[in-house]
Image (cartoon, rainbow, N blue to C red; front, side, top):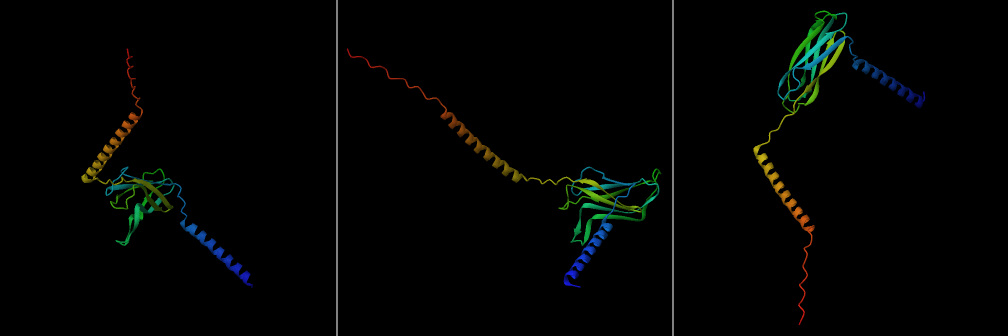
Length: 209
């Protein structure tokens, strides 16, 4: 086999392996929605302040003609990150069960599942003013995902009295200077447009007799 033929064969094998890897990755990461199961989530308040506690409300409704088991619920908050100081991931929570709950078929009294989860808004730099809480529910029919909007007020920074006095003093100086400049401009413009005064002619000299 010549060098060119061997090179083409190797390139073809590499392309085939890459294509198979892409298919495998798509089959693993792709999670189509589960038809018939509805997930709704919301917070107990429309807005929070840094350091305040709240409640996340989760509701799962079964619209199928057969029971569905809920195995786990994973919650990921906007401040989800790895804390190197603690050596652990923070801002997430997983609720597990064997199973966690079983919701019966549509139209029955137990065709839904409801749960409340408490959380606390960080008071440090992790806080985000507007984002969403991601919720993933693992069921016997597949993965159901959703989110709940989360709104946090921006922290207010108080202005000290010393800073306020300095600001007011500077403002007063600026106003005085502007007033003086405006008065000078008005004076010069008025002087330039004033009409010249009329000078009376001298009286006629008397005739000699």
